[in-house]
Length: 293
Image 1 (cartoon, helix red, strand yellow):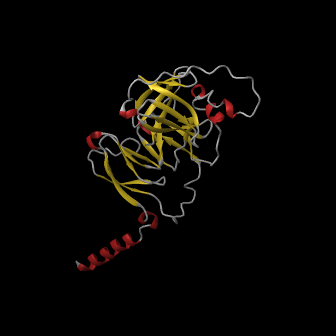
Image 2 (cartoon, rainbow, N blue to C red):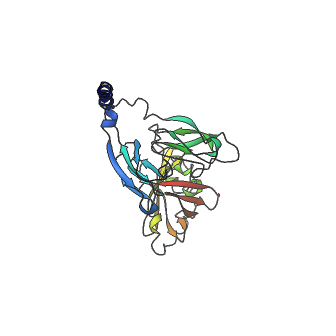
Image 3 (cartoon, helix red, strand yellow):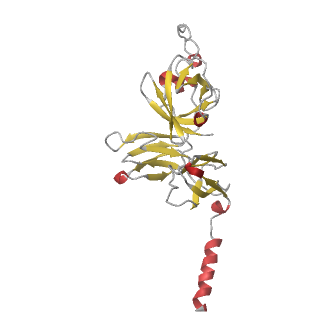
């Protein structure tokens, strides 16, 4: 019996020795959704996280639902408790991991699917291949720093990643927020224009402290301008809309589930999973923001 035990032991040791340096250089952490509540665990993920072991039972740690991540940490929800490996080594030779690209991700048989990609927190739906408007962001598809998920029959082609380009406030105003941001970036245009109309009255003062779930920072991707849009909601009710470089595009006040923007526009504000949904009253469009802190 000893004749096969020794070779087996050698093989096991050899498999351990051959673990890639990229894995050996990563860090570990445990992140728990206690009481089935959302939990965010701070970590410098460098855009890479792997679930090593699920501690909870019942297959609760499904990426994109029970857990996910961005560059600043790992989030868990709905009872997921797990051990995670995160980060990268400096010499792993990741090839094109940090390059932008596009891929097709399909929910076959109306089942959940996760497609790995270094999104760098930028994803846009280029084309829906399914029928029936199944690819609604936040419901039929979504993403985190490590990939794109689809569900409920959504089949689509997605563009992801960053190309290093920057846009000004006027470009953001013409993109995802349209009427919500327009008017805040008039001064950034270099072309001569007639004098603007008198500014709208200031938004009403917020009444009371906003709910704790609404407070924090959020991020959304503007597919029209290839920019990230940053949203912050303070306990006082003050709301700021910023471009990727931190410049203020618009600001407003939250009161009774509504945002009253400085330019006179209004938006409804609602909780949606680990993030929030904002709807433009004038256009009827709504946008999903993922929580970033």
